[in-house]
Image 1: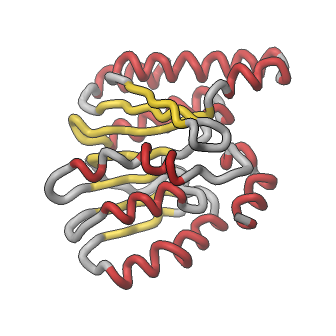
Image 2: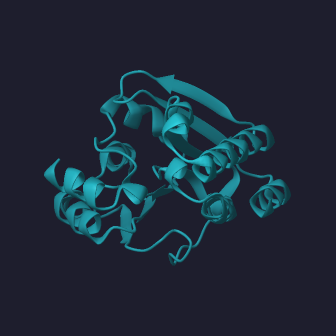
Length: 217
């Protein structure tokens, strides 16, 4: 918790909260993994201190591959020390690799069955959001699932306390999200058991042309 609070204060744009995600939100974000038969390939983008990582690790089995991409070096060290190294020692049949890099530059080879994304897109420039989604869809398997979340009502709350440029940016972020949900069979689920309450969004892969078109807008 101390590591999370320290990094949240130091770099709020990439952290997006001063409180880690709850176990209930983690369960919602990772629910699809357990329903996939055979070996699975899972990618987590922006794990932070690992609330979703913990849920994912519990669902993995021999033959699975799990890649994590985290830009914050402090979080990378904590993930390796507290979660990934101990897990590897007890689960030699699962391939787990942490990439300490931005998702745009990480050395990854798809396709992935499930991508779980914890990035705070409402803090990002719209162009960066488009770039990240373009990369994630390029890595997502045909019929795979991409899951991300945002805090409920975050743009409504932020709007009155930001300037005109900030409101325009938030509006564009909302527009990009709605477009992605329309074009990728989007579903959403409200998770009240999180602080603050969150909305999990599920998008489907397999619509590469539309994903590219969306990302270019």
